[in-house]
Amino acid sequence: MQTTTMKDQQISSEDRRLIHRILLDFIILTLLCMPLIICEYIIEPFRRGFFCSDETIRYPFRDNTITLIMLALFVTLLPAIIVITVEYTHYYRCGRTKDTLLLFGRNVPVWIVEFFKHASYYLFGALLTFNATELGKFTIGRLRPHFISVCQPQLADGSTCDAPQNLYRYVEDYSCAGVGYTRDDVRQARLSFPSGHSSLSFYAMIFLIIYLQYKFTWRGSRFSRYFLQFSLLMLAWFTALSRVIDNWHHWSDVLCGSLLGILGAVITAIFINKDFRTPLLQCLNANLPHQNSTNLKDSMATLPSFTQRHEVA
Image (cartoon, rainbow, N blue to C red; front, side, top):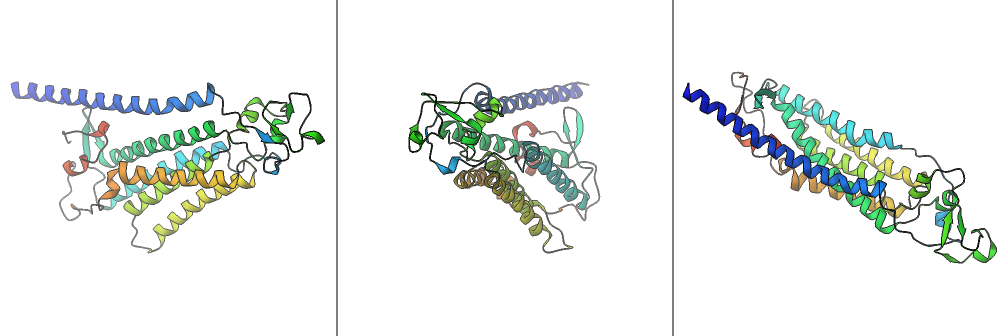
């Protein structure tokens, strides 16, 4: 009876430590969301002047080929589907889909724990990349290629950029008429550098490419993994190209945004998620009798703080 009571106290103590780790990680992720909220609803981007004769900001306004909803699906739903499919398939091929970990008194399949582990690293890196992108946008305040069309600037003397005397004039004191456009459209016209679509899409796709290089194998085809990786890369590439085609970004905005996303993905996948720095463990128990539980001391060392446990189902 005394042994059972001590065991229950031990599990309760570990549960409390696990809750503390989850809360700490949640606080960190919340803090990373705060700059995004501040940039979106509180502060204004740097107010940059312009030449009325600058042809690079006189392009017509066009709708997005890759909308915000499509971008959100690319960077959230698509990675989730790929990671959870690969994790389940890997454990299924090893005959270990019934392996579980004891979390909060419940047996949780190991492949689900692996999915949430990679998802947490992915989310952390995505917020870092997004914050770096927003910092560039609001610090530089570069005007988009369609700035003149959307802003329709009116100078302090009441004239416009179409007036002959303003042709080569550098304008700093102006207001935007924005006829036919919303206030948010006018504000977005000053947030060109770097490209957020490019940084987020390249971050998501490069992270998945590294993940597939580490996790995905298929003996039925030598080129299946490389074809999938190439398709993901082309998806990010097309998203970046569309920003120039749609007159939402200059080519240099797209270049810097793409490099920022690639850098964020490499840092996250290799230096933060240390699973990608070690060889993938093969099916060590493939030839052993199947068990309903497993001892994962080695793999638990790589889990994020909110999934580290000493108890195994």
